[in-house]
Length: 216
Image (tube, rainbow, N blue to C red):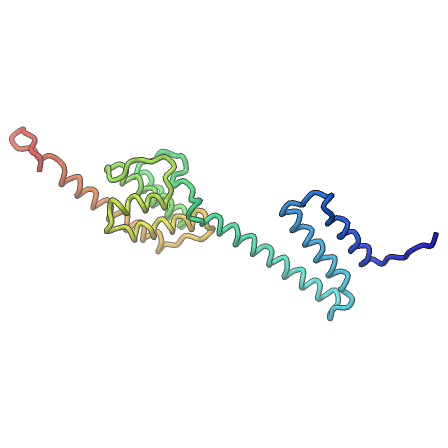
């Protein structure tokens, strides 16, 4: 029986056609990406001799391809983390008061850890609003939900609350660095809320006159 010579490209194409037949199970997305990458590398190797610059050109292309893949993965992860529909809980499980979160925030800021300072200062904001009765405690509340709920109760601060929540999400789930300016913005919001809630408590507290409680 005569021998049929099949070159490398023909054999590769024959294998690809065989694997594409419906009798074989469909590959997962990861497998398809891996197969696409293998195919690309094979093509680069097969055509390497004919490319200007030969293997040097291939090496440069591979480096660029690797960088592109890494950047694409990072962008995809950042997009998923900062998706406002998938925010994570504002608190990390530790039960701290507003004053305790505020103290941790100041310590983090003094150490230059602005991301941690931002997180704890917004948690101080949330606790302050809960402790003073502006908001009811809600397990699992997110930063975005905090901005929405507090913005409804305090519409004059709605824009600042939303900016603070977005900053919290960016440094916590979006891999963005915290800054001193961002921290100061949230600290100013916290101070404003403390003054506002203190004034609110004073206005609604009973006044005592000659031993009798008199509602103002």
